[in-house]
Image (tube, rainbow, N blue to C red; front, side):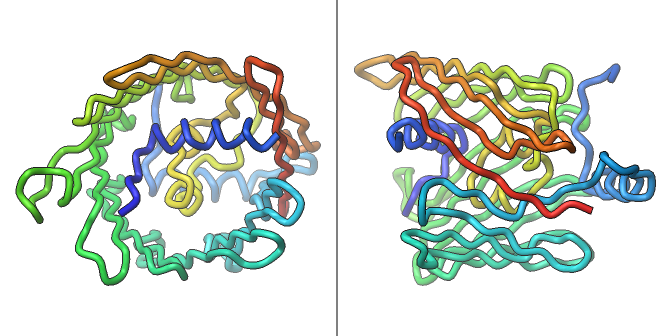
Amino acid sequence: MKKHNLLLALFAFLMFAVSCGEDEDETLSVDEQEEVQEEEEENETPGDEICQISEIIYAPGERMAFGYNADGDMLTLTSYSDNVEDDKITFSYSNGRLVKGTSDSGGSVDVEYASDKISKFIYQFEGESEIDEYRFSYTGEVISKIENWDNYSGNVPGEFTLYATENFTYSGDNITQYSSAEIEGETFEAVIAYDDKKNPFQNSLGYFIWELDISAFYSANNPVSFEITYSDDTSTEEYTQTVAYTYNEDDYPTLRTYTDEEGDTYSEQMSYDCN
């Protein structure tokens, strides 16, 4: 079964990108996020619209499409390869909260809550007994740690074992540093700098489930640089990657271009539905 390590997911994504050419730091609870969105919608003025991302184009024929209902809840995420639908995940809601995502490829994720905060993701593939759980811990209202437990990495089949621990540090409204350590000895650290523009993926739970990008979900702004250190039993790799953006009139990015230390670049285009 695919190991859904959040930080290694970011590492893999960045490597894929270049290979293709106020007073307190606080994260809002789920209910508070909904209240803020409602207030913003009531007080919005021309030129300060609320936008939802509708599409990401990675390359010709390679894209991701986002589907919403009339209330703005994300219902589907669909990926296309060579202009042909590759996979789709459909989201289910209960009492206004996203509680499940089901993929056409057979995978699923259940989302559990403790009070008004996400407490657990549970990933499983249809017909398989292997399960990955991501258990969320908070310091006050701020996400501070996620533990990855599974029932197949330990010595006792079916018994849940701690596979990886991931820790997060905030500066202002953004996660600026995080680290991961696995039982197999691999470690991963990232230091992230940000712009001052709007992050279209903040609080987008459906996108978080799909991409497992922790900084995109919890941070208010868009990353402009990554300083990454990855180590295993035999070696340590360090590298820096930068990200440049073009924005629309509402300060959402419409184009982002990744550049690695050797000057190789990769770009993505983003489209929105604004109101």
